Length: 323
Image (cartoon, rainbow, N blue to C red; front, top):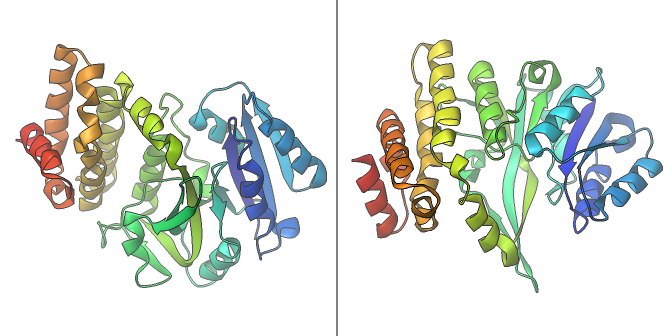
């Protein structure tokens, strides 16, 4: 089985080698079965040189594509367009994350028993506190409690999936989709949801792991800046959430519970205490439009109250907006 792994990177010299090494060290032969596409998204640090050294060492397995900075969606699309035609599955790895050594072997074993077009390993946070690191499971890891299995989104609407890191997609199916380059966040969530609505099930690989690196020394500033962009609010709702509703109605004739769960799970981010930022970022008229749109999507996703499990302040914000 042939794998292509796409890794966009931008100024990632700190951990890029670790990420690439986690692919090379796979127990399923890297030299025989794996191609890595490193997309240099306009880096200005030493990460380009690191990538080039790996490509020189493994010329049959690693390619570096250098492009002007255009964001993760464009970089991933470039990677997809350059995948070899004999590829079976395309995986995505962020430039500071790592995969467990058995990831590809576990996927191959799973596919010998089940015919699915998307596979996902268990997801863990690798938190860097400077002097030590801590590994903790993602909140959605409840999906893996029963081991390796197939999740059917029509029968199991709470088995939501929306992140691209560690996700593997059948290449013949992926060709029908592209990452929306107008989005600088949630572009992966949009593609994965569209993919799942069409393909309807995916494989859960409980015995493999994807480790998402978080530098907690920088986390606060990164989170703050991401919520200080006006396009994170009304344009996001209208672009992403509305696409979920429209696609679900076109495919199933209705908004299926899976889509409601997904919107509800993601919408709770707007109720975190940090997200009073929208009052700073948006004018009063823009705030009114945003709240109106959020109310509309909360009503359409009536399961939202099942997912809000935060502080009383968050609950108060949720109730005031979704009333």
